[in-house]
Image (cartoon, rainbow, N blue to C red; front, side, top):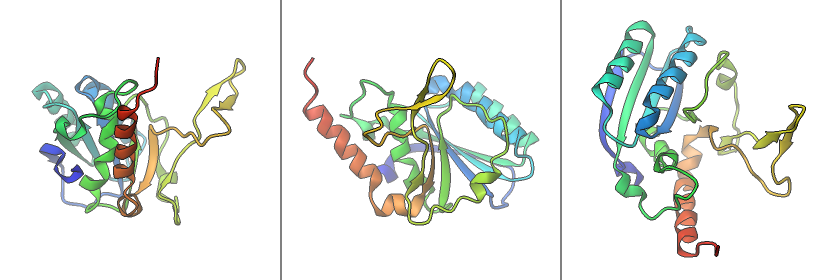
Length: 204
């Protein structure tokens, strides 16, 4: 199903040089401008590496927003590829807490698997304040992804891990091994769990 989730792809490429790093986003149409801000902040802090950005969006992108991405291509050594998603592939999923765009991260590996071995997934409500060179040196070894424990801050600003008896992590930022993700069918297993939740919703 994930190979066919894209109904249209727009490739904005400055040149044919292979990228050093790949970043993907899953967004609703309302987040087109914020993801542009995030991309700009990443480019400003990483001028010496070529980054390929992959934006998965829940609707046809507006011409005005598309022209802004074209302007970024003119000023930076980068690629931006926009994937307009067919949401029918994500029907019958639990959507009480998330927009449908949150589930695009399940389709992303199948669209990027022939381009790179690893990529960084980031939620669009962030801003980069430094370079991403540390990611170039991450060795995932036998792990499917590198993630960060989810936490809240106490009154003094110190992190408190959530539900320390369970394994929670922040899915808004993941560095992923594409081959292992696909090999172990992570997307399919997540979809299966979500559909199972919909069959047996919690009683209010």
